[in-house]
Amino acid sequence: MSHGSPTSILLNIGHAMDHWILVVFAYSWGVIAGVWGVEWTELTPFNYGALFMFGAGSIVSGRLGDLWGRWVMMVIFFVGMGVSALIIALCTNKWQIGAALTLMGAFASIYHPVGIPMLVQKARNPGFTIGINGLAGNMGIAIAAGASVYIAQRFGWQAAFILPGLICLACAVAFVVLVPREEMAPAKRAPKMNDLPPAVMARVFAIMTFTAVTGSIVFNFTTNGNGELLAIRAKSIAQDPAMLATMLFVIFSLASLAQLVVGKMIDRYPLKNIYLPIVLLQVPLFLLASQVEGWALFLTAICFMLLVFGAIPFTDAMIVKYIDDRMRSRVTGVRLAIGFGVSSFVVALIGPAVK
Image (cartoon, rainbow, N blue to C red; front, side):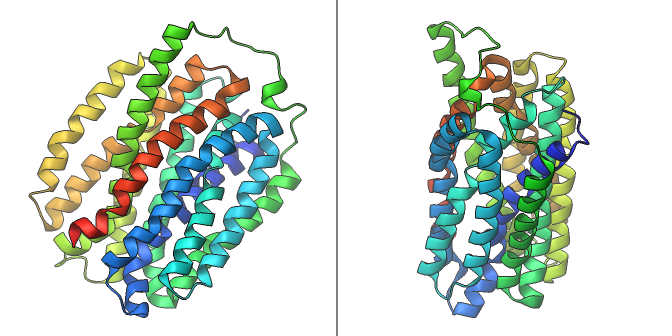
C-alpha cells in the first residue's frame, strides 16, 4: 500500500481525527468552566469515561476488527466519532458532557486496533509507515491544541467539537466511496507467520504491556496537561488565547517529527537500541520542566515531547514484527485496554491533584 493511496491517506487522517476529538475537551475545559460557572479542576474527572473507554473498548474493537473486517469498523469509527462530537456540542452540564464523552471514547477505541493493522498489513517498510501514521496522529493533537482554545474563545466551546465532527462525517463518506472492501476478514485468512512459542509470546506480551502502560501514562498526562501547565507556569507570555494556542501547536507539531525519524530507525536497527535511550532521556527533562517557567518551560516542553512522541511507535512495531496479521487487531486491542485503562485513571486526577 503506497503512502499516497486513498486508503493510506484516509487512515492517516483517521488517526489525526481520533486524537483531535479526544483532546478537544482538555483544551476547552477552561472556556467551558467559565460558561458554566465552575472551576476547570471540577471538569477534569468527567474526561475519565472517554479515556477509559478509549482503552477498554479496544478489546471489543480489536476483536470485531479481526472477525467482521477492518473496512466495516473504520466506517463505524468515522460515523461514530462525527455523531458523538456533535452530541457533545449539545450538552449543557458536566454530567451530560461526561456521558457524551464516554460515548465518544467508545468510538475512538476503534482506530488503533483496526486502522493501524489495516495500514501496515502490506507495508514494505512498516517502521516508516508507522512513523508517518504517528506523525498524523500527533498533528491531530497539535491542531486540536492550537485550534480548540482559539475556536472555543472566539466562537464558543461547542464549535470546537462541531468542526472536527463534521470533518469525520465527510471522511466517512470518502472512505465508503474510495476505499475497497476486504475480500475476507483477517481472522479467516491463512496465517503468514509462524506463531511464537508460548514462553516467547508471554515475554513479548509482557514487554508490550509494560511499555504500553508507562507510555500511555506519560502520553496522556502531557497531551492533556500541557495547556494548563503553560497557562499557569508561562502566564506572562501565554495570557492571550491565540498565543497559548500557537505555543501548543508549535510544541506538538515539532515533536511529531520525531516519529518519522524513529520510524526510519526502526526499519534499520534493533528496537531496544532505540527505545531505551529515548525513555531514559525523558527523566531529566521532566525534572527540568518542573523547575523552569516562561520561555524556558516552552523550550523544555518541545524537548520532552520529542521524546514522548518518539517512544510511541515501538509497541506497534513489536506487534508487526511478532504477531501475524490475522490476530493483530485483537493483540493491539488488549495492550491498549491495559495501557489506557490505567492511564485514564491517572489523567482524571490532573484536576484534583492541581487543586
